[in-house]
Amino acid sequence: MKPLKPVEPALRVALGVGFFVVFVGVWSIATFGGFVQKTFLADPVTMLRSGVTLLTQYGFGYDIGMTVWRVLGGFVIAAVLALPLGVCMGAYKPVEAFFEPFVSFARYLPASAFIPLLILWAGIGEAQKLAVIFIGSFFSLVLMISVTVGNTRRDLVEAAYTLGVSDRSLIRRVLIPGAAPEIAEILRMVLGWAWTYVIVAELIGASSGIGHMITDSQALLATDQIIFGIIVIGLIGLISDFAFKWFNLRLFPWAQLGR
Image (cartoon, rainbow, N blue to C red):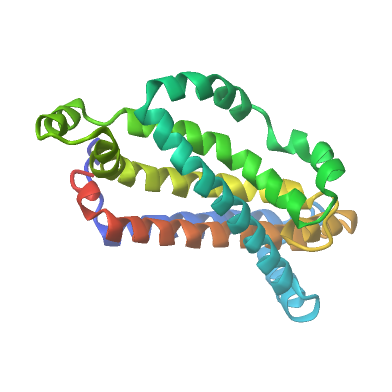
């Protein structure tokens, strides 16, 4: 191994799969070996059986669909509003000076702290859950996008002005294309954060969703169902992360050079 030396694709896959194998092996030894009581940690086989039961008899597939819909809905709303504001803040320093103090302040406010207010304002329906995800994603997206756009190489900007480009064309043809690969990575990263917010939103006042199932399982001390719900979240997140990476690679192949 050498610092920053790329790993061959086949070796990367093998190493990634190897970690999961080791993880399941340690989990199996801890549970089947009697080192941890099953009341506190179910074994992998019991967890899988409970997962099949949830999917086939208790409609857990519907819960998964509702959670995915909430994550995508809240995240898409946040991204659609954050992109233009972030670009404007990065391109125009007066706009940045006006918005950045509040955005930086709001970014540190935990989305879960707004749940009591959101329940009062929007009830316990879908609007409340979408709002939690929006609050948790929007301000981070705005700030990170503005920093990325503002860090555009100055030589590109000066070259564009030398060629007679207007301010509006500079944003459209230099700043946005130059920042697009990093913005795509920002969206991928914040989508992962959105998954943490939706589970918090579903723990209170929800009648469906993965978080609702986990809460009900906690009351029954059903650690097998809780673990299955957590693993489902991780698998969906992993699939969405790989899909984002694949999509970004196809859209911005030049951004991968040198990585």
